[in-house]
Amino acid sequence: MPEIRGYLTELERELYHRNIRIPEVGEEGQLKLLRSRVLIVGLGGLGSPALYYLAACGVGEIGIVDGDRVELSNLQRQILHGREDVGREKTASAGRSITRLRPDLRLNPYSCRISEANAEEIVAPYDFVIEATDNFASKFLINDVCVRLGKAFSHAGILGMYGQTMTVVPGKGPCYRCVFSDPPPGAVPTTQEAGVLGAVPGVLGAIQAAEAIKYLLNCGRLLVGRLLTWDALAMHFREIPLPADMRCVICKKGADLQPSWSNRKET
Ligand SMILES: [Zn+2]
Image (tube, rainbow, N blue to C red; front, side, top):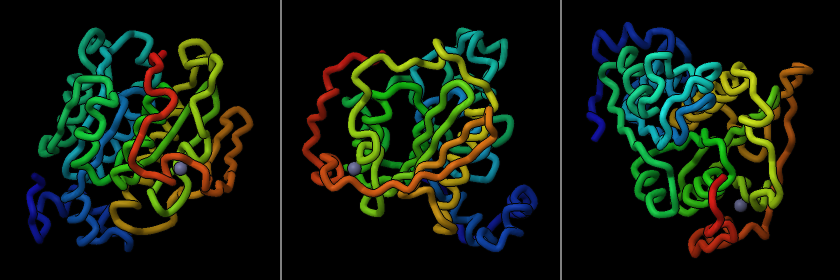
């Protein structure tokens, strides 16, 4: 349980001085962050900057989910991990990196792949979820579970020199499934096949962290009902308005999930 404290310590005042100077944060907002819980699913290119910035800004408790081990080819974008971490579980490697920055962080590692069997239990205790996964099955699963539990989350996807992100607040705008309806039936290239420039998830993961912080502080305008896309090659950001899909099975029903992809194998 996050410690409930009504004041900032001297150390916290100094650590978070630049946060506190922001009118939307202040001491009250900083206390809110210190009491907040965020879940990050995926400790790769997106999860790395998201975890760094959320931990650095003082979020009190962070859950990290990843069942993979660090590989050499991860290191050009997954900045949580180093050469010496190759072969280690990503949760362990991320834990080592982030503890250097935040020895006081309450870090909950889940060294497993998120699945229908464990998703609800993992997501339930958190205030906000960062969807930083690299496969469609996990993206749709996280969407469906978050909508069912009424949890806000940030989605991001990347490929090559292109990225996109949106925020879902159940009941307040479209969900991921309203926009993308179903996992694509055919083969979609993965980053392993098509490549990805590390700076692309770097920027997108930082945007996801900013969305989480805004949600926790209840300030600003979230990426709800709009998809932000970034073409790094053209250096062009674009915003696409997203209407809610009234036929979306998840938003309509909330519960009762038997999605068509539930028996599909992840790729
Ligand atoms: Zn929906």
